[in-house]
Image (cartoon, rainbow, N blue to C red; front, side, top):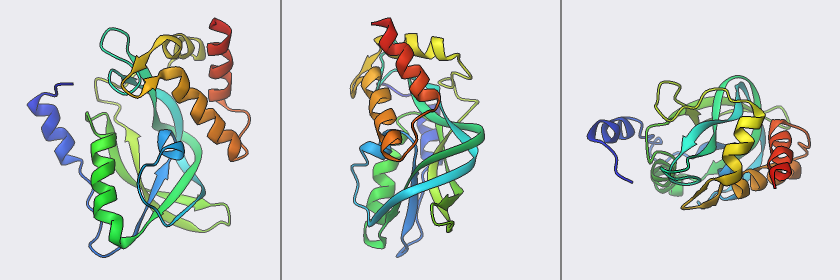
Length: 194
């Protein structure tokens, strides 16, 4: 996947650097919930207010390709989102931040942001997460569940099918006790397509 010099500069400008010698938290709402691939000290459910999980990012790499783009999740404005909060140890902080930069910012479609979370016990913390950039060319905006289902049904990228991405996310939401949300409706529509 080739990236323009302008896009490379945007990606570099969005590098998150943790405080030296300090641990930090990461908020996961999509594939990081079920495939973090980084070391962490602790994981627990947490709620983010002011953003919701949505299929609002066009994918031509991980879950789609240039000929048949897929969709991946982003945090879009409004509502709330239950996800998983990872506590990253100070010794791993720089390595994890670099890993997340490489994984989440293959283009500049996300903005790394420190957000306020509330854990299940009511404790509050700030965590790094990746919010959809509404001005980026990959931002798909608000699509109907039916439109999302038709895109997700057929798209495949380097990390596999868009359907598997949706199915894994729904499974992990169910593991956290979330059994009825828009992603469940979209999955039913995908399964009805065949």
